[in-house]
Image (cartoon, rainbow, N blue to C red):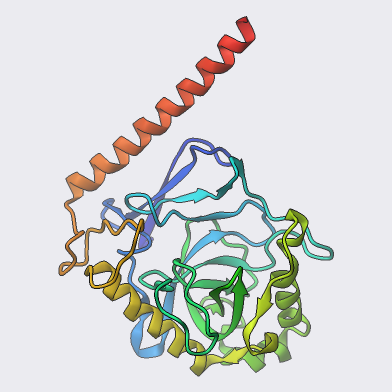
Amino acid sequence: MSRYSVEERAGPHSPEYRLFFKDAAGRYISPFHDIPIYADAGKNVFNMVVEVPRWTNAKMEISTKEPLNPIKQDVKKGKLRFVANVFPHKGYIWNYGAIPQTWEDPGHKDENTGCCGDNDPIDVCEIGSKVCSRGEVIKVKVLGTLALIDEGETDWKVIAINVEDPEADSYNDIEDVRRMKPGYLEATVDWFRRYKVPDGKPENQFAFNGEFKGKDFALDVIKGTHEHWKALITKKADGGEINCTNLTVSDSPFCCSQDCAKATVDAVSTSLSGQILVLLSGEKEQFVW
């Protein structure tokens, strides 16, 4: 039986679309706060929440500012965001997502990059052969990391592989990626450098001159972001607009009951339905007019 399931509200590629998460008992949870960081702490195997399946373009992400943090499509200037196909790449070139219970603190200047965090869970690029599904929670082995500087903010990109991948045992550090998938790391740097250029923005920059750091370095970075999340979820750090509603972190002042969580989902869904009705009503009036 799957550890987690998802529940869609509204249609994909609409402003109203939300993907809520449930645990194995069917209880609503937050993918940001309630899914454990580790799938197997002893072996440094992490959980990864897949936001964007490989080869797709819609910029889906955990909504950090909404209750229970459903996945939604990012919106900029009133428009749904899609990443462009930057030759020779098609959409996202890995399964893209985040490690839960991590937070890149915007109030903390990273000693390695000299820049503060981007206010999100730490990102993961999963390089296995399977094209995952949006909302899928997979177990990954960390191989290394890339330090992207995105509009002046530290935005770590962890390189990992699904432990269930047929070749997972052959990957243990970042050099194994270079050996087993020649050109993939270079393509990753190229993708992150140029993916915002079609939107009129400059090329992104990197710390360490765009060089990847290995597994041990990446593990230290992840563990650091987990400590920042602990401060966030216990209200020892200022999370600003981040919504910390959760059901499983007992020492968190934001912990709520399942009844509260269900009411939250129902309220969000009703609100979104109202937005759809208003939109349809407006369209009808324009048509009649």
